[in-house]
Length: 208
Image (tube, rainbow, N blue to C red; front, side):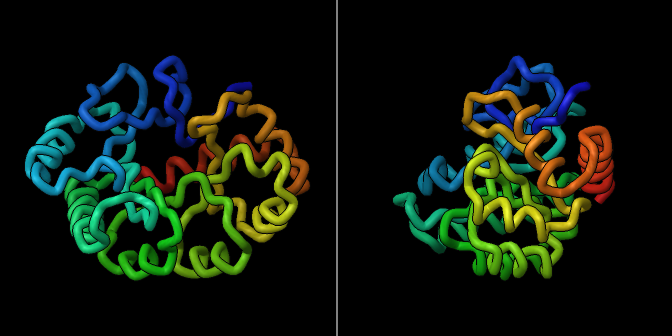
């Protein structure tokens, strides 16, 4: 059985969504493309958007990762401007949005009203109250390796509806099957049922 990796950085993984790095070129695998907060160049924003807009091919599954990050040395207003522009672009090309968020969840929620496409928080590992607020606002949550050992996050995953979940490896070097096994155990469903549900979720976000 193959397991879909919602967000990864390995060009050799074909069953998932490869995150295309800034200035990269589309691979022969499904990918996402976006301007990450850490990569924003305030003196070359138009050049960055030209790169983004000119690399949308049939293999592009989503826009991102993009979002807001309180730790990067980029002015918050500029981050918000670039994020909003990517949301509007995703609306135009009808692609879901993969979001990078560090300590800006309520700001991210405030941008939801601009999005006509599904929004997915990648690498979610925060407390249950934040998860509940995101879910209330119709976000999807993608979970990674931390679920294997973080008991608090496991409890958060338990309250997350199956139709709002994705699973990913991100930059971590581990077999995603381990994550599927742990989540199927936590949710009390078979591995096969979980796998089918994730693929159904994927089709849902692709169709807006």
